[in-house]
Image (cartoon, rainbow, N blue to C red; front, side, top):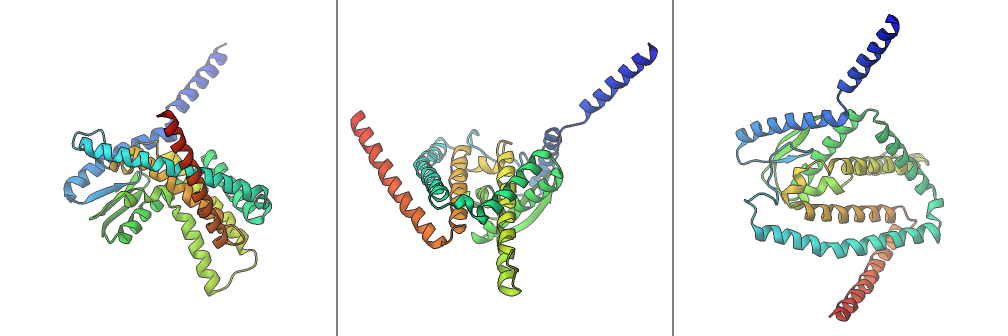
Length: 303
């Protein structure tokens, strides 16, 4: 009897120890809090330099709910976001109609490009859901996030004066910021661009074996899904990058930009990327005209 109670107590203690072990989400929240305190201290030292954060709460930023943002400014952000919704709808309709046409009529789903891309994507999904090497993937995501910020700062003729990446978050200090700089990591698959860039360099310098294209498709599927999964994981976590330009406007821009990136990948995977791109643009214009006419008739009838 005594032995039985001892086993039960041991089981309870083991369960308590398992419950006391923090989950990945709890560790992230604790890391965010520590990074927030560190960022506040750094902000006090760096004066007017702006901090671009990689994960939630790494830097104090202004958002639409704060009194320092004027009502007119908030209304302008909402109006621009609303104005972008029809573009998002037409782009979504065009993307799915083009993809279904390519998949059914042209047998795109039967091509090696599709299957190798899909294999890479499924491997990344399984790895992400398993939680294996999650800290490594988190670090790579934050690194790619901050490097994308930095690249777009230079493209916008700004300067980067500080760069930091860790599991607790990341930031760059810069003398310039805008909506493209702030949101670029959410729609630019950094590591996919690295994979494609390396492929092009090696193809034009050293030459590649015949199966290199298949490796490229698989690696692109893996890295693009990595970008997509971690971006979806990060966005709900109170991102300062989104608050900087208003959350609604930022999410609208991110959705539309990611859709255009996916459309670009679809066109590049076609036998003739140039013709596929032209067909997508023509189809987009046609759908825009159809939906515009339908909206006009609906408005006229309602009036």
